[in-house]
Length: 465
Image (cartoon, rainbow, N blue to C red; front, side):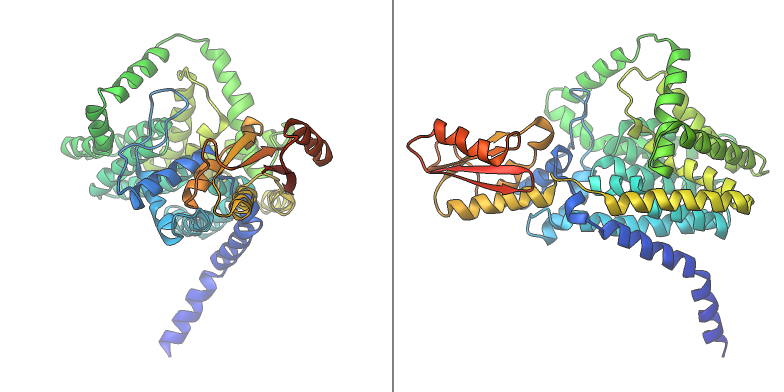
């Protein structure tokens, strides 16, 4: 008689989580084929998978960053060996693989927030992550920054355990931090600094544990060190150039205002309400401020990690001389969500108003989302050309804007037949002119050839035979 009662109670406790997962899964699958871009960021892992499975080579570096000579570690590429291996090197499995990771992230966030705070806070936090269209977009974007949130969950859980006397978790958390800095985004170094600064607050610290934790961070650099040694210190030179650039002085007060007004707060507001407009930025600022106050009033020193995390990251970017896109603040989305969750759970009226605005803006954005250039379109174009050319050789000229022209040649390689210079058939991709105008233009340019045009989405495929 005890087991059925226990099971029933357990199921009732997790009903909110089940509903959140159900809604989050639906929103993620909605228009997934139109949402996966397969641009430059997605080509890099595809090429790495091709080299691994076909050429039996494994790379020790990942994507080159916007600062020339700066490379990520290889982990993000290696992770995608799983979906590429399952789908025989086709990218079709990649967005679905990331949906699975997204669902696991929702569950992890709920369980960790429940341990650290309470069930209500955990439910609100998990719902924000599951429903926010920005979170879904980061997931569909399939780039390394996406894993910063999952790394953040690991970081806060390990620090929580460390503050309750389990020293091993400082080392585990340090390893996770190093993993994120090296493989996902170097700016996660600010989160790593906040992690260690907060760890110093705990009484009964061990120098040995901190030394081992430092080594746990550095061990993640090993693949890059090996690559650097093999390639004439190319990574070291890039790091020196980066350090020299950031050694310059700046107007720090102007940078402070810019980061607060134009970057961080609008970014958080857009994450919550799909708009960085002034009214939504003010609402976000109020929620963050009240959550900040409620957090620092807690008696346990551990909770200082959340404000320290936000402050250290913000101050770090004030002294950072490189370009600062708003997505660099992805590393503090977790403390932002927790601040908002703590703030809204206290007063029902605030919770109700927040829910109405949050649900309407994000679900509306998800339902109405549309884009004409994506993996589904690019895949259809590649398949059409391969079917149309048959056994003949072919070449492809790309007359598309820079924002639309990525992914095609990698897809041809993954499909096993690549364009060749001087191929018998010629295909030209064009998106700038109406179809009838395109036909006239290319008939004049190739008067002795048979010119046909086929349109997929907004892309014209001109075949010249």
